[in-house]
Length: 283
Ligand SMILES: [Zn+2]
Image 1 (cartoon, rainbow, N blue to C red):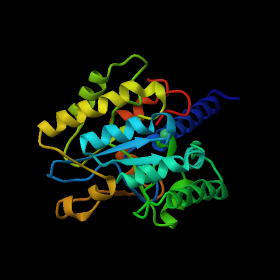
Image 2: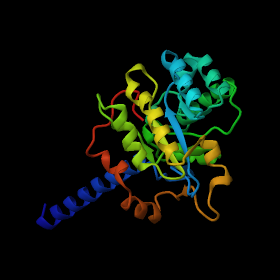
Image 3: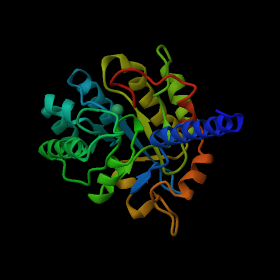
Image 4: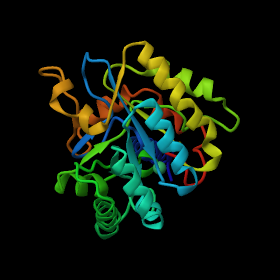
């Protein structure tokens, strides 16, 4: 092959790799989705904030979680997985009876990338049915496992009129083992703004630091005048500033997505520098 030909091949391979890298980052970005409605936070001047808890429910810590939120007088949104809910149906009912919201975090907590429509549909519909069976009657929001979504998932959510809810404050996904509750709460408190959606992982016995961080964060934010609402309440028009957009809608890989991608803060970039938390407990 001639030198010029080699150069062309090298440029084409580099471009393809950069394209894949961009696509991979796009699948992970909490603020971007290729199609449909995605809510990482709402635009408001009201000091309202929503706490969201991913995965579970897990009976071993259910009493602790319910007691903690009852004492704090906070209603939260739990993005549960269908598999865990079906293993502990009573746990879902108790969350609903305590006034919390249930959201859909898929059935099996698989990465929703390059999956068939049949797979995606089963994951979402089975979980919604279990959430209804637990007695929850409000709108069911969806949160993709690992924050990942590409092509079939956004298409399915859009086609079925579902809203994806991510977060703008990730309290503990990248907190390594041994991180103290104080530092989890302190780091989250620094980043909360009016209209923020905070992501926590408080299920599973080993997440004790995250559970202990919740009351610390709640008290800190209340001192700053924040009120705690559910995701459904946060998305109600009441809080949203007139004319402000609270969601992002993007056409399939159009230029706006790419220009938005270029401005993305750390969550997309962190993928390349921070090992993803292992196991089912991650995001
Ligand atoms: Zn998760």
